[in-house]
Image: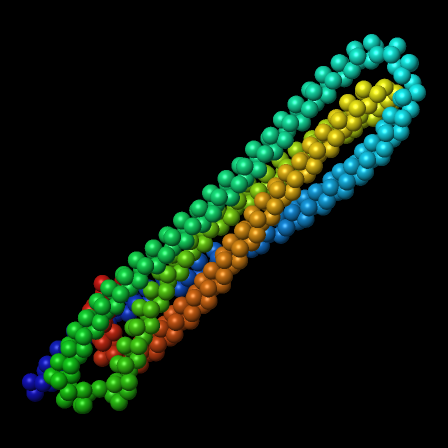
Length: 385
């Protein structure tokens, strides 16, 4: 009789705690599921925006490469015209030997005109060199930005490795605490079983032993799902930071390409003006020996400057190509992280659905002992979260 009275008191305590524990557990499961759905929607939106930006960048890069190839063909044709002009000047040189007497009478007028033309040419030459120096400054600036971006990437990788080390240490400490609590819980269960063996044999249904093991397994799955959710949130923050860095780099690269196009147009206009000036000088003063040599030297210097300009344009294109390759590698890394987070989200959602279904099953069975067992585990491991 004494044992029966003791058993009745235990059941009354269980029924008083049952509704509040069930409600708290269901609210935690619903909250976890809602947060996971929000994270999945944010990741899908970021992926769609990234694909659109990638397509736009690819189209702009194709158009810029086509313009560069066209300018290269135009410069090649101009060089061929310069070779033809040099051959014609050589022929004129032979003719000038027969016109020396006439040249002596025109020398005074020619000197005055040459001084004017020389001043104009020197002015244009200074402007052209200034444009070249600006292009060199732009190349150095882009190199500095690329080095800074690589340094940011190295700092990000160092930070990620440091965070992983710290999380690994925290996880080890957490596992040790869980093992200690598990041992303490096993001791409590052993003492409880030794004192209540007769009550188990008389009052509990047959499925109770299996239900206890299932409840323990569900508790471990719920804890693992919460840990995975924290990991997913950390990865989501890292992906947002990487996406922000990619956006800044794409805007900088677009502005650089626009400035490069403007400089190429200006160089093309200056080069055309110089060609027209050379043709005018050849037509007007082609019969004089000294001026022919001056014009030839100027034409050769212009050709050398054009070659240097082509080399600098090739260097700028190579820098842009390296930046594009680096951006593609970052996009690939971001896509891999998004795939991993999507897989982890689906696993956590599936685990939450399994736990929720099992809780509903336990609730429908109306087993007061099973619900009391879950409540004891929650109170014992309350500080795990």
